[in-house]
Picture 1 (cartoon, rainbow, N blue to C red):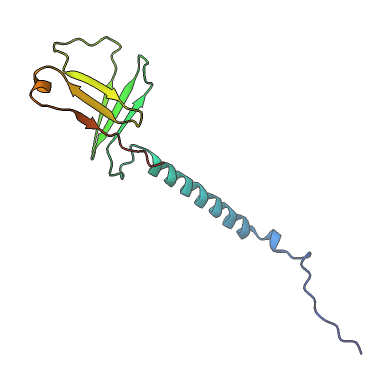
Picture 2 (cartoon, rainbow, N blue to C red):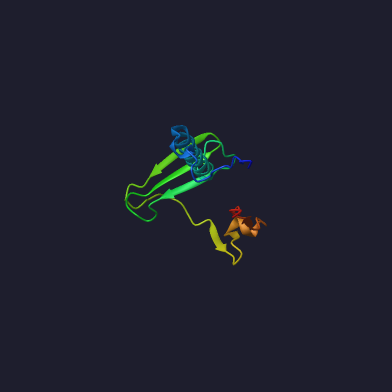
Length: 128
């Protein structure tokens, strides 16, 4: 007599009809969407969990320009009025931007003669 082997027929597998598999796939899709949204929140300059201060300028040079400044846990928003500013004062010095991005301030008048020297501002690198 012949022995008959039981074979596994992969093509006749009925797992494709199982509704729980489609639910598992939907959960996987939502996990990916949540991960992308978390990355977007972390990369936002106004992220409430960030430790650095940030300045965001919206619509620069336009009449409806706004500037949002984040210092620690405090947010300040400044809106442009569209009018030219006016005030009293005098020229305090000159600022120069070097090729490497460094800003150098050179005071004029009595401060420079008294050895006030120069103030150097190094902008923070974006790290990207």
